[in-house]
Length: 566
Image (cartoon, rainbow, N blue to C red; front, side, top):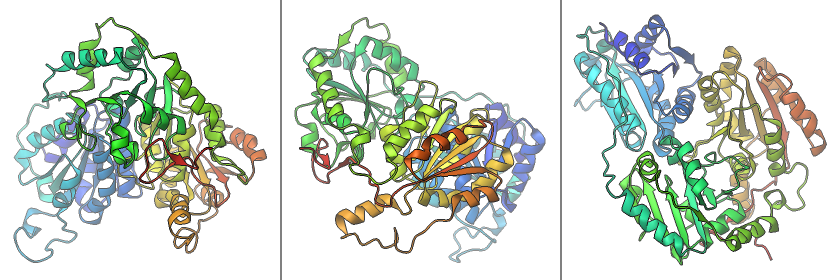
């Protein structure tokens, strides 16, 4: 069969039901084969970056590789931000790029380029992929695709790239049986029981235990097992940005979101605990603050991660276990011990929470309080299956105040921090979840980066509900300029503006409404959900000086956040 036919059958056999692409000359044959094979939803985007981010959402939700295709040259390079997003956030994905014919490639020739749009995407993508393949013969295609699939889903999940010259796509290859890939783990699980017994011993002497969870819980498929674990071990839980949706908002052990802009009381718990169990989360700068010695002071840290390089990395002297969380929870499932965190510790955290709730961080605010609005949005949006936030102030307000329920998930760009993520990722999420309603939360700056994908929403009639928190500037950097650049607003306020988003929505055939003051919120949210089957754009206009608080103070311990409390 032809190489392109094999690729289509391979993806279909793996249970991949959707691919995202922007058509181009060097991938025309592959897309044609996907169309004729049938059974795969081909979603045409309007930018390759958006295709990559939609595939990212597919990978996060299914734990199967998201698939995005792009042509050679600019098509391939446009994928790179989305590829990096998958790499830093541990999302399985396979990116397929077309390449010029082998006889048009410069090889070791010192000239810049021979074939039109010839670009060495493999070299460019290598630093942000688990592996990048440059295909040289048709016969190696079956082995490369099988290896790529296994690499993407195994260990710490991540992206791979396969670059296929146009002439090879048309080659006939011998038929290969298409096997079923299984997630494989090259890990030693012998240490799980001793590690856990050491933790239980430490727990007996702990007065302030805490659990920190990250995206590793979802990527290992252990959300249910973790919930069962918490039934026996009544310990408060804080989440990283990417572990935000591991516990529903109302779960009694959910303490809050930690980090640079984390909930004040959650950061206090993380900084003040004496025993910390870290499950599937890095201990990076934005989680611990730059003052490492104060973070470590007075606490024992037990850290489990699938990747050895994340253990005893920035934060040293941890008791570590390199293991898949699925193996960890499987081996300790029969441990019948129970534990209840001291009530004094729980009361202390609650007192910190009540002393300054998230909705009270912005004092004397003009107009709409974004934290209060996010709570109202959550309560009105029980039909949404997912919330997808962009990067910027909107991301932090969402993470501080969203009330996720047990049937909802939360997606955002973490390590890459890519503005423009939310709209294409919402497309990927809605399609992956069966064309169900999802909410895209963006700022006015980030939304403009992939604004063209409004047409993808309209063309596919996706019930994506868009919220633009419009503070009329690039707010996070504007706040930074207030703190460190004497309020010199170059390129955040000066030299920046945005269109009338409701008029843009009308041009794309999408209904819209603008909320200008708190009294209009109830009306706006009613219109927002008037027809759950249709897309809607809700613009929320806010004062330009609306900040994100609390904020970790640079160089200070994680428990010290601005504005300082008396």
